[in-house]
Length: 54
Figure 1 (cartoon, helix red, strand yellow):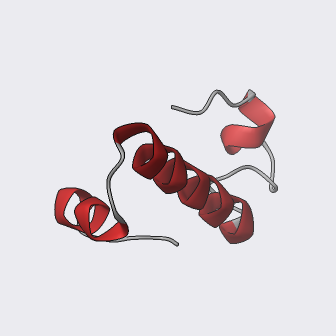
Figure 2 (cartoon, rainbow, N blue to C red; figure 1 turned 120 degrees about the horizontal axis):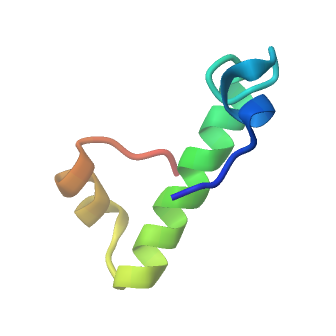
């Protein structure tokens, strides 16, 4: 889970819904955190979520 201000979410043009680079940065960080927390692999992430961002 990522806590975002309204501006960083969808209230400005640089919010995550309008900024592909920011969107991918958060997805990569989330995947890395999931892998590290659960001690799983990139392949496990793909099996669970159907894609990967690393």
